[in-house]
Length: 162
Length: 284
Length: 115
Image 1 (cartoon, rainbow over the protein chains, first blue to last red):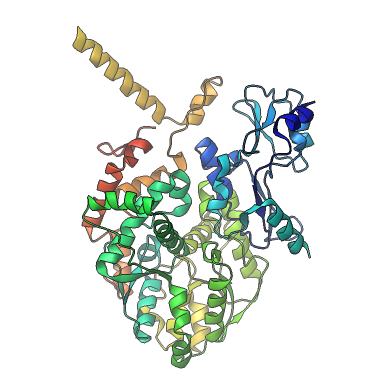
Image 2: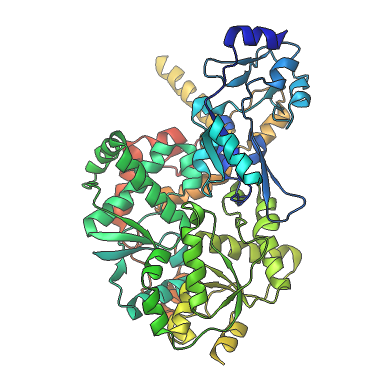
């Protein structure tokens, strides 16, 4: 129901740009997480960040990143029982804190588990793309995080896999 | 145009040997080197840019204006200072509104930016003079080493990492590749998560060096040294582990290869890991 | 009568400031339902920011370091803001003009962060 209504209202609107991550370039400095935590919570504690950098368990010294790509058909949006997740005019997928009941379905539905619980407010929170100007990309000094148009991003990732 | 060497926060206080060695090397290569006088903190981009990008721009531009007043090209050997100055200049150049904002405040202290200033990394200058360096080598340094460039040095792709490698190789040093070469030292992470910063970043690196057959760790960035120095002390206090492979600045190795003695730049003083073994190996 | 009221208000404000200087975490344990307040300057960077406001650089220079610098063949005090105080005063002027201290809630007289 939620998915249908959102498609009716916004069509397949998506953010033109998308954040992608290149593990070959990442140094694991976590500036992206720290900047994100400060932007949204005014703290440098990286546990508050809305994107995640993990150490690759198979390859020591390499890092994996998980960040919201504001999907064209978001799984979190379709799974939400309260219809608290919506797409705004820019195509950014957001969670309304007023409607969210903190059930965690979105976290289960998302293929990479992006939405996380905010323990202070007891609602789920996720990346809001900094309203179109992501801080994490600005702060990445190794240029592992890149802001690219969707098509180019897909090509970049395909080429990287080869 | 003269070069104005930007000291930064760490170099004059924690690594005077590197400061002296840098000036010895510059003098030896006949480079027009001088201090950039009256400098302040570069305004750590990691902290200030996150708090407010405009404040970062404003406070960094004071150093740029100072360089313009002294008519020098800023030279940074700390990657953090380099990226802070470089990006500030880029942003002011590309955004006239920001330039106006910055100049508005700078006018009140009698400074102004007219975009005549330029920012260079110390590695760029060394690489430009690579032939001179090769000619001046009296004492090839036959050691094995692991190098650490630092995150900010990778901003412009593989340019600075390649320069770093080529300069090291030109001295006769054999570079050992490790899986942790690219990994950050964890300086900024120290503000967020000290445990990970110490034991999962710089600590891992130092432990790997200790196990490997490298003689030392070569670095260029003062910010990274700050973190390594801290980590060595924390390991000693908390775990009782003493590292034996020293952490050496590139300028020191250059100075040694040009025939200077370790005493000329106080290589032995004020170090968390003594470089005696390395000195003996190089000089013998 | 009016003056007394003003004084009481000032006292209240001061006590409020004293309270907030305590550790935020302790407070949140005492009153779990109270909404957490976070100042613009996170606790962990406060010492560095304070030194930045007072010295202009992150690390101060003491006698010990001066001696080591001399042994290395350098000037006792480097020609940074440590020596040339003018640029530090200029920086403080900029910081005040731009309202940075106010927004980070730093009291320049008491040399302390309000929050």
